[in-house]
Image 1 (spheres, helix red, strand yellow):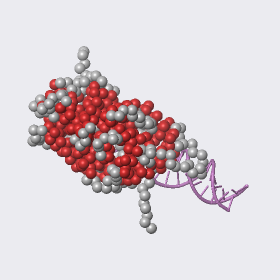
Image 2 (cartoon, chains in turn blue, purple, cyan, yellow):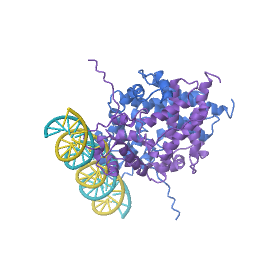
Image 3 (tube, helix red, strand yellow):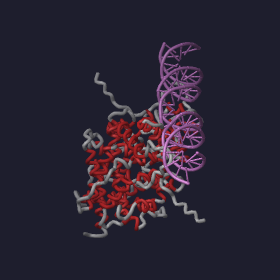
Image 4 (cartoon, chains in turn brown, red, orange, yellow):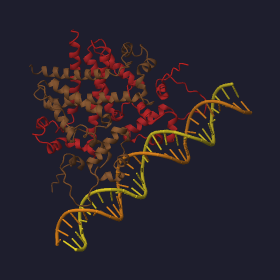
Length: 249
Length: 249
DNA sequence: TAAAACTGCGTATGGTTTACGCAAAAGCGT
DNA sequence: ACGCTTTTGCGTAAACCATACGCAGTTTTA
């Protein structure tokens, strides 16, 4: 029989790619995946990711919680589909220099995450598989086209930059949340003071060298752009060095 | 009145640093933070992080769920304390070369995460504040001591490497989970096939260049060490370039 | 000896995801 | 035109979850 056992994509993912015909039978659907994902994103934008429950999304749609499960197989799947919506289309590149292209890609990616901070709180359950996520992946690889990097290395480089973007935005979001909440996130606002109380220059000399320069006492939040820049520059400089090592311009 | 309003650390954190005297009054405690955290880690090791509920941890201790709240103010706090336990002490450095030191630090850090995969699933709620986490932070800064980097840049560099370690381990854990589960994580095992089905060389030229070289068809899991190496080398090469730019050896 | 303080924990509340099955609606084959 | 089949919406309910509140009992201290 040779059962091929070809693995199938979740049907909602296939639907996101536009490869599912509505079979027509049965009552006219009043709901569809797009409306559900739209509503979920609306809730996340207004009230944060924690507010996104099947119940809350159903209320937003004026429908019943269980009705959603006809179109989405689980909440995780809904979350995955949500991350595809705000991405829209990646930017077109104008520069001939791969550094400029990768830099533009990173900043644009960060901008999207900053506009929709809940996106970085959605756990990554695997490689990009929805249309816009794949489009951004493609754009990242395109930025590195024509360089001396092997294909696998390009993928690694894009992943590295992507990870940097995510973690930077997440850190920023934590800081901003610290200003309001009295939770453990509050620790962040007084991090320098806490470290000074818990450690000494003998226990933690390197840490106290940083403390002495006031690294953790930043009141101005403008430093975050610089922090992002530092990581981005480091990665790009590293890629540059790797390329130069095997192929001089 | 000048109410100082000095923010206080969570009492369990102060306890982790050994700065809380048991006040003595009241019945002899049968539970303490250490036993609770131990039990929680035991559950996470055996059954994964999702199995760690107050109920499950209490069962492990032969106690009642609400008894835990006398020693731990919330589940989030318990999770934070959990991440401190497996770290133990960071490695001592032997090399004079900061590259070697940073590399050793990164590999050792990754080893811990790989031995306790649930650790990377605990969301980072802020900068390191528990003893062992701070000790690792200190060690990372120590690796960069004596270099031309500013103190703030050292912190950024350690954060960059730390993020790379975390994301690498998380990706590996996802892959390993894909072999068993039939969830959406299954996508990972057939990622190349799915991309070939959903995209064309016209839509996604850069992606198909990678596909043609079989980048996503890796059956051997040994490639993961190489992927980690690539990112680590890139970061280190980047830091090297930044140092060289302002201070030649 | 009495008061104070502290532990363990029972009860209960309000949330979560989602399995299961049923009634109604709509198109298809005859 | 009529029944069959498919599909939708959704009601019910089960099995979880974190944790607020308050009470009973135990131990130290005054």
